[in-house]
Image (cartoon, rainbow, N blue to C red):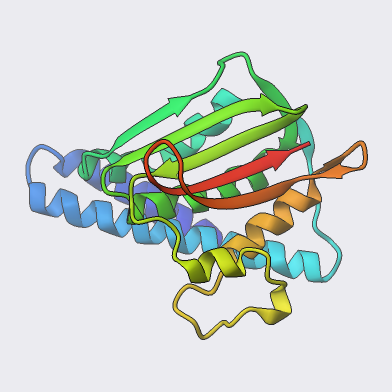
Length: 210
């Protein structure tokens, strides 16, 4: 399913490039289709990781990576939607900044958060990466309405306590916390933080990696 979805997303990219200057309405529809296919692909990756975690088989391939490559990958995956909706995305980081983490898992984690920012923002998103207290800190902020109180409340809820019948279940946040905590170094483990406010006044998701 994952491979088929990747092929579908690539086909949408090709079609969008071909129709961008010919049919604006079709281009907008393809952008929406690309967005939904990307969300579905992210959800599949989350389910796979949750299954592996349940079986205690969540593999981590921790290597040194440039933060620029990580952020560029997330932006590239969503370039079609960003351009079609004329969103303003600012990325703030040191091009020489490197850190140790699992590229695939952290990329999927941040992509899921970024997709939500695309959906709920009012046109502006700010991605920032920096070192803080000997940890890598990556934040994604938007100028939307912010996280509802229900989301802030469930950000620390355990998997077995999630209400899977609710509209926004918190499953994505549980996945993010799972991946963050799997990254450990010198008796410290990664974590996530949800807040409202920030530089754009909306929701702020922050990832810390030791």
